[in-house]
Image (tube, rainbow, N blue to C red; front, side, top):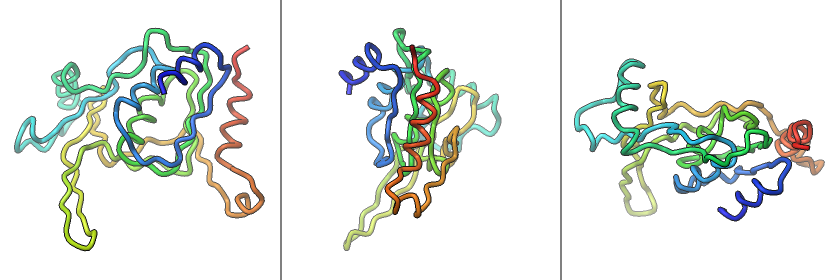
Length: 194
């Protein structure tokens, strides 16, 4: 993935990232993708109940900002890179998500030339989890923490809204048309670098 990002920075006039499988992944992959389009920053912090047992999280934006400032050097999501390309149009196509599939669009949204294309907001899975497994393949997952944005807002359960809400139609699929991709392609083509 690092080689692809390096190649995009050197040679691409525009990029479409298709993350519709959205099986989550690792945070370092989500952070790496943001190096294409953002200057360095801390986008959010991870707040685990293990850090403060019995604390349910911030109740005001001011409390959230204080928590963000307290933990940003310890458990922050670092986005961007000094050699990012502010002029690179990047379309991120989303559909199904969880875990790092929430972190990546959150870390990319708001960058100068990034647009998110999806049929709905992401799941808001900004947490780690405990899993209890039972026989027969039955399991229960419980969120065990939260992510706090720089503005103090708690992110768990609040998905990232797409810039372009694109609803694929069954008739498009039957006609061989990829509605989400075509919308992303049309936008990137209007924004291409010279």
